[in-house]
Amino acid sequence: MAGTYSQIHIQTVFAVKYRMALLDVSWEDRLQKYITGIVQNHGHKMLAINNVEDHIHLFFGLRPGQSVSNLMQNVKSDSTVWINQQQFTERKFYWQEGFSAFSYNKSDIDRVVKYIMNQKEHHKTVSMQDENHAMLKDAGIEFDVRYTFKPPMD
Image (cartoon, rainbow, N blue to C red; front, side, top):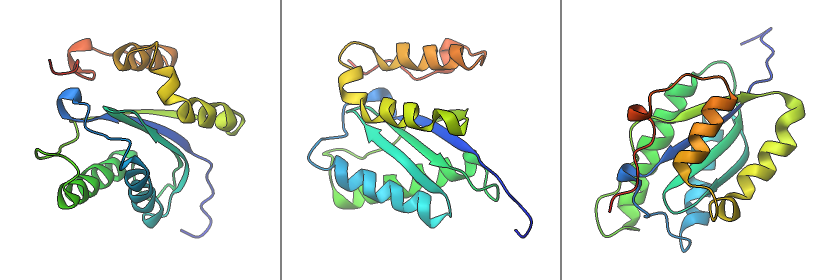
């Protein structure tokens, strides 16, 4: 779009369906590269991506021609098909419905990148639910716990 200028930095977080610990370290690098490709093929710039066993964080520069919701739909549906084609999991793989999204200023980029790249260490002491609720509260987003990420399956 000629004459359109933007600086939009978005972090999204979404989980494996039922918060099952299915994202294995043996294929996480391939998953992160695949999702980065999806984001970049839609014209956005991946700034950081990292996951733990049951959820993933993306941080990207969003171009204004596509909504965050539409991009997340593409990322989740395309990566689901790919994960299932690769047969990385014993059962059929799905992402949990929904996602969280947060916007940041340019001055926040380094801090957010470090936070995302430190996820494995971070989640040794903080649960995903606690993390997500704190992020929502810090952003001033009202939420109903019934509709946030579901607890892990027993």
